[in-house]
Length: 127
Image (cartoon, rainbow, N blue to C red; front, top):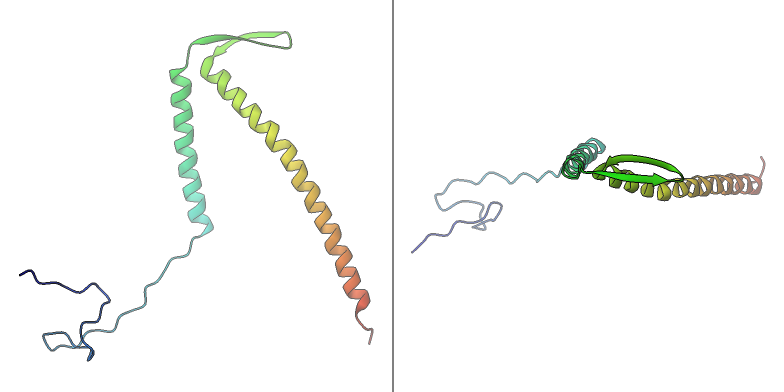
């Protein structure tokens, strides 16, 4: 019959001794490494490099020249570049108004914090 071994950390006997009669060393606590900003930055930069590589491959595979016209301006650009430019402009159409809204909300929150701090200071009894 096959002999079964206990998993690490399992206690096989109540006395703390192994079958051979030697004392088992105490189990050390398992340390968990917390996530850090540098770890997140490393992951983000690695992901960014993969995305850039995929974009480069996309542009190189779609190198056929196409005609582009916009408000009277005409030109010839590779298809991959034209599609990438359209995607970037679409992202900017979302990011710019979003950034303006975030700034607006932060200014409003700052005004509210100042008003609340003024009310708390006014409600404290003067010595």
